[in-house]
Image (tube, rainbow, N blue to C red; front, side):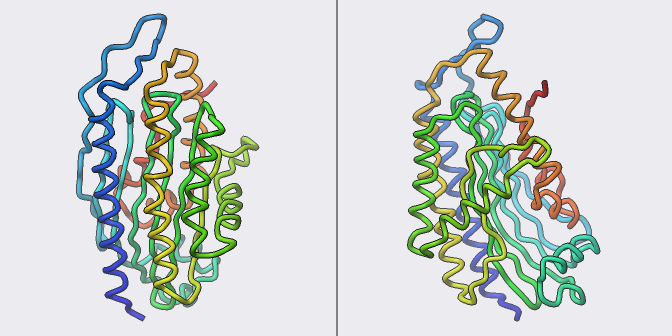
Length: 300
């Protein structure tokens, strides 16, 4: 079950999605010149808007293994304080811990053949204005000699929640799911609520979205079509929220709430996130794996 053409098709689509999101985010930076709100810290007005942000693009490699990717990170922009949009296509042999974890999940043949291939896009955005929600999205395909599956999703992480923003985000994802499975949105929303829960805090890290993994209905084209729909839904789900909130005034209290909320994001990604663990255990560039961490955070 080599599926060479199918793997190539998926990797190219994820790469194209990465390119389109990067272009859209840089266009938003240009657009924000006149609409960007100034906050206040310590009672003093913040400096004027900086130059529009641009992504720094760095090729990545897996040390001693196969494949790599593209790490694209923007820091200190008008809209985005830090955002990463990473693409990867990697292959090789799983380390014993990763192999054991996948075998425990029931991946066929994984206990005896640890070869794998994976490709996907991973995005995390931390925003300048505390009124604009942070967001996460990823879509991916995974292959082993005896199995294949898709996974992904998106979730919203506001520190200052606006119910209409939450509703728009979820409605857009619901519309993306509907043509592909009558129960997909409800199933994958519940999965996100469970997956993005922080047990030691007794709360979710945000307002949810959808999450799915191990998707193999037996029809690869149908499962890939759904995964593409999730990726295509991201910009329509998120960009209207940014445009709605990026011009809103904020103060030191709002920024403090944002930094404290970011602590939840950092705790979750370092302690529980399966993708972070997989990336580090399979030898991928640690800077690319950990690009999801916020630039600043605060604990009380």
